[in-house]
Length: 171
Image 1 (cartoon, rainbow, N blue to C red):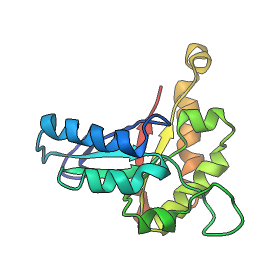
Image 2: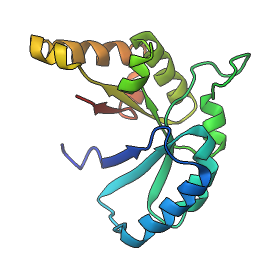
Image 3: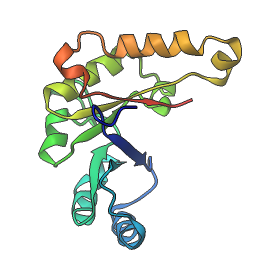
Image 4: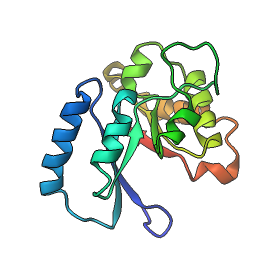
């Protein structure tokens, strides 16, 4: 990767594992060991219920807070979902889309595409995940599968916004 054109991003998420109280404690422990790196962007994507706590806890570190998911509609009767505008209002800059665990729960490439478009329209940076299963890898279709996921996930994304998308490979 040419760092003149793209900065390295190190991202992590903790899935459905920490409460707000545990998030605060984790941030205090991380502060002790976190290097003050400037050559990369570091971010932690957390469940929606921990976003405010994480944003406050990590404000003194060079760590951005992202979300683990977003819904593609702006508003409406979508109980339990969170919109890109809601995330942005909480200070989120990044959002994971198309994680393998979400895809395993039924999220489709069309859903991923709609979420990528919604995130970009709200000014968020989507982290679009792609990857193959063990069976697909053993079948020798990894390249074709990943290419298809990327093409479908980025369908309709304007050329000037493509550079704002982070593609994360999850084998």
